[in-house]
Length: 187
Image (cartoon, rainbow, N blue to C red; front, side):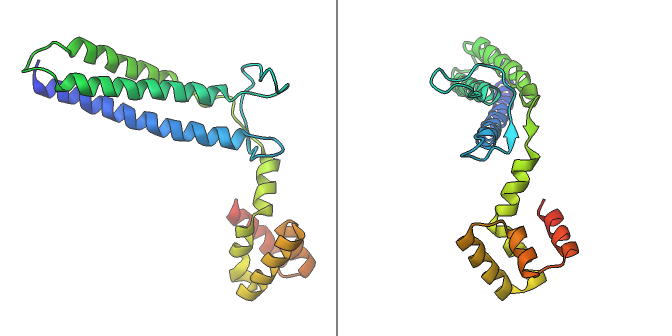
């Protein structure tokens, strides 16, 4: 088997590994966004595909995300195997069956997780609540109300733990039309 064919297999495997690493990052982000609903982010809901914990009744396990991570770990392992096999031999085909097997596994497993995002639902109310409570939203209002007014607003919000929208309306810093435009920009 020519060196070029082995190099092509290593290249394809490396691309699948890059995809796997990206999928792990995305899956972990989705797990954080789905955590909650009271004490965490809770911006999205994952499908209830498996009963929860034996010690936490009603808990929904992030099974789609966990499945993606398991597949990604397998694909990364396939890449390590392919890398080691491609180094072997003096133009001998001793390891090519393993390279072929692991490359096909990596392709098949990667294709299988593409639909893992089916059933994810956005919790719009929670997302809006988090944006409205966000201190950077006051920073975004600085060009409209001025830096000093925004700084006072931020301190008051921190002290009172109120939503920035309420503070703006109470202090009449922004007209309603500007406030609406600001929220659209922040969305």
